[in-house]
Amino acid sequence: MALNSIVYGIKHNNEDIRAASRSGGMFTAVTDVVLNDGGAVYGCALNDFFLAEHRRAETKAERDLFRGSKYIQSNIGDSFKDVKNDLILGKTVLFSGTPCQIEGLVNFLKVSKTDLSKLITIDIICHGVPSPMVWSDYLNAVADVESIDAVDFRDKANFGWRAHIETLTINGEKKSSDKFKKLFFSHLIVRPSCFNCHYKNTKRISDITIGDYWRIEDNDKDLEDESGVALV
Image (cartoon, rainbow, N blue to C red; front, side, top):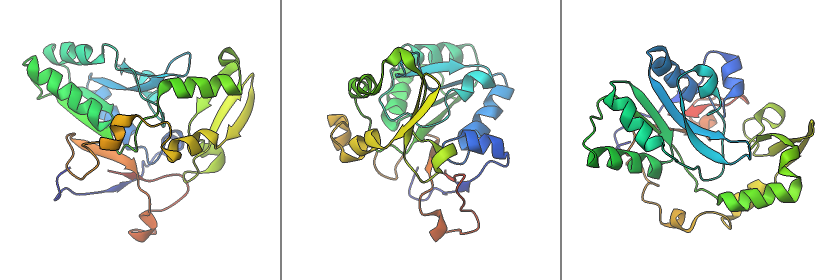
């Protein structure tokens, strides 16, 4: 995002999609275009142990697992290689991640002399990534991981867009807390490299940058509501 880039406030016109999204539903809108065209989407999902990992999606059901916030570092796995293979096959590819992950992907593709003309990149406005080990220890302190049915890092359905409360579903019972949020914003569990981040500025490496549009009420009171607005 250069200094002269345009910034938008976005709300998806489908309220069900916006309710299932972290903020305004921009990610779903863009990836729908790619998937409808037969392309592939890469994003972050939680595995069976509720750790974040990058995956490939060719269907909207697979893509829907990428919605929502995951406040831990994701495991890239073989996704860079898979993106390269998709591009070689002529597929349109959308890759979403933190800014450092985007630059890692782009540099990998450039070194391997891969055509980037069909690559679309989306980075999130990143506060920093906590250690997956701290997150695992936190889960184990709360409950036996095998008894956890679901994790919502920011429970918008029950607490609204502005709240930052995680809800764990344990043996069918929902338990909410702000303890991990407090650890996150204390910066005690954020990666050391994040304190020297090269991407916390308006010069972005990605095609599109998205995040929560905080203080939207200062710019457009009519656009503000509790269901969420995306900054794009």
